[in-house]
Length: 229
Image 1 (cartoon, rainbow, N blue to C red):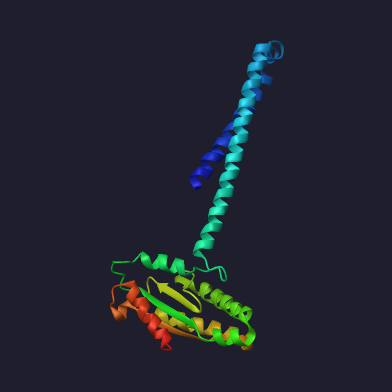
Image 2 (image 1 turned 90 degrees about the vertical axis):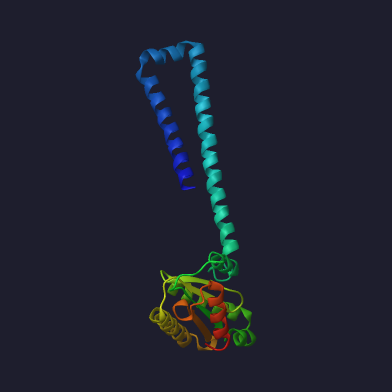
């Protein structure tokens, strides 16, 4: 699409340059100017060429505008398909698509994952309503998305469950992620104690488990999260 943008921009600039050069030649060359002014056939030919040039410019401009609109609509469609509508982070479909990249192939030695369950969410929904629960999900999503930058893939894997997948992670790196996440959650809970974020986290590192397949690693982290970490 970027190449298409460049080509269309170049074409528009070329048409503008041709039009400007044509005007310059006509007004600079007195004989040509007088010929176009006096000879009806030359004048008709010039008018036809200018109409053709102008129409081409208009159609190309409209084409460029249509492409821009189409690209924006495609981006919105991608966001609707791959992003969670509540939080804006990767949704379950995106998680499945990410996991499918490693289907039937051995995963890297340092691959790891963490499953996070928001266990306080049912109580918040029951006590304060689902709008309050949605706010908690949004706040937690902001926290985990911020922590994921240059670290891992994160997504909301349905309901109150979140998934983080690390490409290059050992026990120290995972512990650092967990400690930072814990600090951010404590800061949130101090400011909003009535909507406390409590979660269980299950982790699985391929350097320790040697499972070989990502689905097995995720299943193990999910089981550990359900058991309370």
